[in-house]
Picture 1 (tube, rainbow, N blue to C red):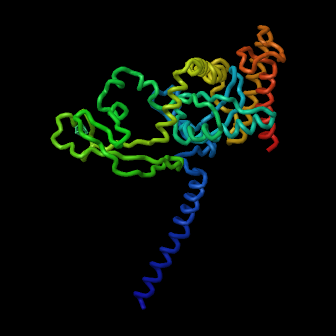
Picture 2 (cartoon, rainbow, N blue to C red; picture 1 turned 180 degrees about the vertical axis):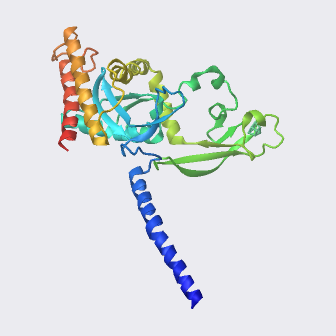
Picture 3 (spheres, rainbow, N blue to C red; picture 1 turned 60 degrees about the horizontal axis):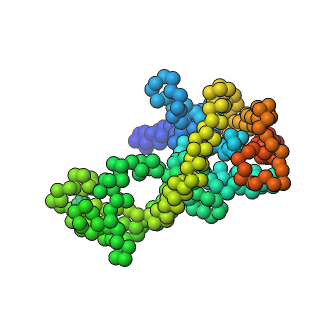
Length: 342
Ligand code: SF4
């Protein structure tokens, strides 16, 4: 009887702990999980903001701060469209940004630009496939675009791209003359879940090779992965980027969105949002974008650099037309208006 009573007491105590301690914690974890929505962190003061490493690090300790990843599309330094994202990485957000830009331009009856130029942070297979699907000309750099032009890289005999490839018999040849034969294909998923078909080639025997230290770190034989689709896109991007127009667009890109961010963040000292939450912050940036475009339009008018749209003016004329400016204003205005209404 005594033992039964003791066991009942123990059970009651455990149920009490479960109800009072564990269940509230479980509910809390579930709330955190839903706020995270696939992210690694979120700020308690603004659940939509993610902790990101900022460029301005006043404390010098790499402190993480709640922030958003803002993407802008510009034309002649006028903001055409802006989108807000919660990921630190730029690669997975390009598609969403382009879709939003397409919708914005469609709202004012304008087509998408023919060419897309961006920095190397956007060069992924998923983005390249989307650009191809949309029929845009690809001037998007890929990671390693500048490094591959260096002499040390081009002359490194161990690098995968410098190995001799025999297309008829489908094998690579390593610096020791050994064949890296095709073994199998596999599907690799990116962080965003995009599948890539990869072909694997393996060396037959790397034991006792005197060049092994320079060649690879693997404990087994050397294996190389080839993604033919990505390779095709990269070859196309490389050709475009080295063309006359590509060189012009590369030069132009460095003074397009970067100068806009410089204007907003450095010249106008807009380093911190006043509002919280993705929607409110988007509205705040929208108003800022409209102000930026108006200011640019005004300063261009003052310098008398705008010319009225004439019937004989070619569409790719570098001179900025009034129509282009009004369209950029319309784009930002429609987007901000819809956000405010929501
Ligand atoms: S380590 Fe293997 S793949 Fe590299 S050079 Fe030697 S034999 Fe060739």
